[in-house]
Length: 303
Image 1: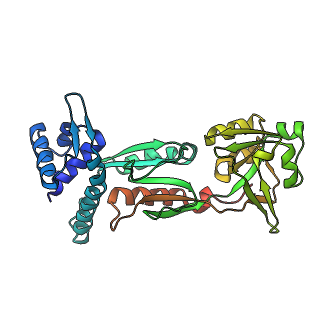
Image 2: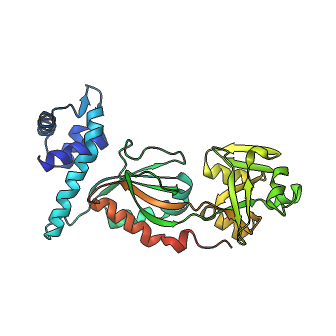
Image 3: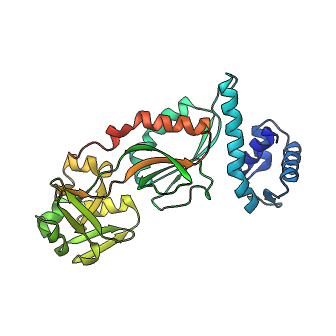
C-alpha cells in the first residue's frame, strides 16, 4: 500500500479538502484526486464522500483512518531505526483536553512548542465534556480521571488531588464546617452527575460528600464555571488542587475540612489509541508536556 497515498488520505480527512491536502504534499489537485480514488479502489470502499460543496469522511473512512495512521507511524519508526527518518516533525496533531486545565497550564506553553516544531500543525479541542477519543479521530488527549478504557494507552502526567473549597465570604455568611456531617446544612456545588463522593481524612476516617442531601445544590458541567461560582460565594465545591492553587495562595478561596480529600485517586493522563508505534508528532508533544509540567508542578501539595 502506497504510504504517500495514505498520508494524503489522512491529511484530507483532517482538512476535509483533497486539493489542499495534495498541495501540502506537493501534488496537483488532479493527481491528489486520482491517488485517493486508487486507494479507495485498493481497499474496496469509499473513504471520502465528495460533493461540489464539501468533502466528508465516510463510515468506512472513519474505520480505516486509525489503521492508515498506524501504517504511516510504522514506516516512520522503521526509517528512524535506520537513521533515515525525516528530520522535521510535521503534519497535524489533533489534541483534546479539559478547557480549564488547558487554559491554566497548556496554553502558556504553546508558543514555545510552536517555535520548536514550526512544521507541526496543532488542532486543539478544549472541553470539560467526555468524548470518544477514537471516534473523534484524536491523536492524543488529556484526561483527569480514573483510566478504564482498555483500547487506550496512557502516560501519567500528574496526580489529581481534589479538595473542598469555599470563598471567605461564603464561610463568613454560612459558617465553616467542622466535620463532614456538617456539609448537609450547607450549599454545595456539584459537577455534572451529583453522585456522592467518598472523603477520607489523613487519619483514615471516611465520610460522604453528597450534594443530594445538602440544604441547596448547584449543578454545573464546566470546571471553570464551578470555580468562578465558588469564588463568588455560591457554596462549597470539590476542586482539583491544580485548578485552585493560585486562589488558595492569594486567599480568595479557603480550604474547607483541610484534613479531608477525595478518597478516589484520579490522575492526569495523556492518552492515545493503542498502537505498536507512537507517531513522532505524538511522542514529541507528550515529552514536551511532561518535561514542562511534570508531576511536581501540577499536583504538588496544598498551600
